Amino acid sequence: MASIQDFSGYQPTWCPGCGDWGIGMAIKKALVELNYSPDQVAVVFGIGCSGNMNDFLNAYALHSLHGRAIPNAIGIKLANHKLPVIAVVGDGDCYGEGGNHFIHACRGNHDITVIVHDNGVYGLTTGQVAPTANKGFKSKSTPAGIVEVPINPLSLALVNGASFVAQGFAGDLNHLISLIKTGICHQGFSLINVLQPCVTFNKINTYQYYLQRVYKLDESYKKDDFKLALEKALQINEEKFPLGVIYEKKSLSYHQQLPQLKDNQSLIDKERFIEYDKLISGFI
Ligand SMILES: Cc1ncc(C[n+]2csc(CCOP(=O)(O)OP(=O)(O)O)c2C)c(N)n1
Ligand code: SF4
Ligand SMILES: [Mg+2]
Image (cartoon, rainbow, N blue to C red; front, side, top):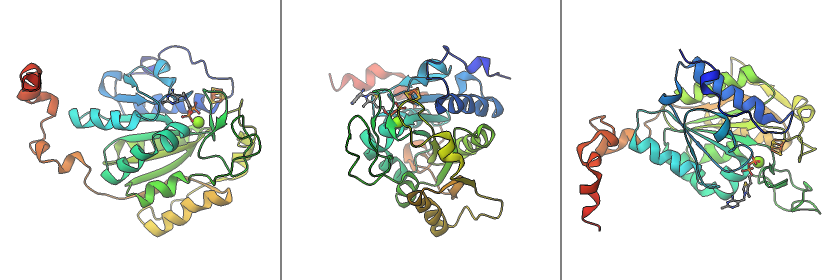
């Protein structure tokens, strides 16, 4: 069985106290507890402090372009659908620059797990405003306060057809590990939006801020009730943050409906894809 050490790459360079430390550890622990070894999972990273985890996590990894982690993750999944595929992204990356990809991954029910570091800022580029920041948030790029209203990631995913929507907190490791494990095991698109304090550039959404506003959904919560899920998602707008699986439904994922994969043989194992030169010879 693999250990945390097997999944560990270089020593992280995140600021001391950053929520990314908790998320990084939660991902490693979830993979260990699911009994994977580093060669049995693919992880695609966006660009950002979140994306820097590419160097700190040992697995089959791809450090993609800013905003383009999701289409790369989908490509990997379609080529080798038996491999669990995770995308680790920032809120700027996923809901800003790559917002279009996020919407289409939800409606396609692509079987990937998207873990978003929701910190309200562009951390790596030193604190410009991200689309999850509250209206009026002052940053280097919005010295007078941001004019737009924030994106609500949970409701965005829900109304676009995501079959698994969850929210975690970087300050609650055990709960986050369990959410990540459930998300990876879910068949279809899974979003785990993680509230992540950026201790350097966001002095509003701190650990204290979240500790006063998060609450856990209890056992009696009905995860398959879409209207209730939407209600919970909209609570974010009132600065109340439900933690847990907000919505979960069973439905066929994208690759399960592809005629090319009906025989369940991975594309990379099919004869015509092995002879790649032959495949492209007609185009050159
Ligand atoms: C196409 C493109 N645009 C802009 C950048 C510059 N850039 C790098 S990281 C980043 C912001 C990252 O913010 P976020 O996705 O929220 O991640 P965080 O650093 O907060 O984890 C930007 C704008 C880039 N690398 N590529
Ligand atoms: S800048 Fe913010 S998000 Fe980036 S490592 Fe530092 S605390 Fe974390
Ligand atoms: Mg960010």
